[in-house]
Length: 182
Image 1 (spheres, one colour):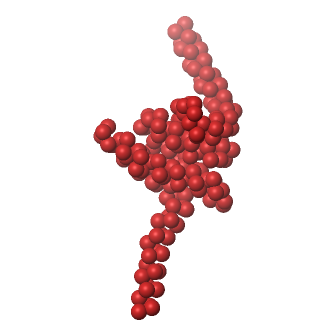
Image 2 (tube, rainbow, N blue to C red):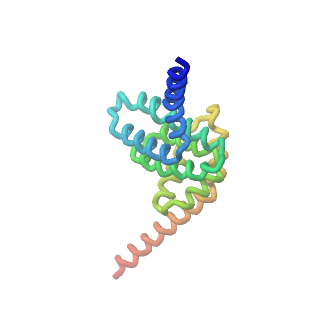
Image 3 (spheres, helix red, strand yellow):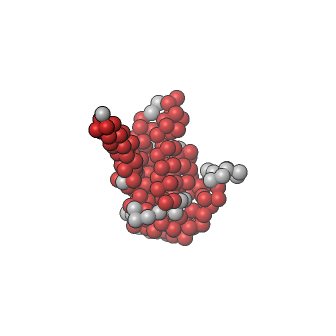
């Protein structure tokens, strides 16, 4: 009888511990974010808010908690969060952007460091996506302070991206002007 209870106990631990261990794995976060993003993108409008609450919010809470804990997997977790968030770009929902920015704000310096390691296009798109999320947080929202810390940490990166964009636009304008004179 004792062996049966031990077997039941071990099976129970495996059932509970399996998903918890998977959640500690940064690749789990990335694949779940991509999956949630794809589901949100395909969801009919009436189902969207429920899906946002059921899939994205809990997942981003879990990611934020993992980032707040820190540890050796923090960098990989932040990278997984940013790469998984690319799937959310297509949704163009400020609520999803704000939730993502709040998760990222768990470690603003790490977020900026990881954004700088991404490809130029991903860095640009994700930076402006996070900025949209930061900007959409209203006064009195308890997340505002964390989002402001993220905004301050990202300010130099955002300035660089804006200057670069302005320079590219000026170069295109000058090239179009030179082309029309010929």
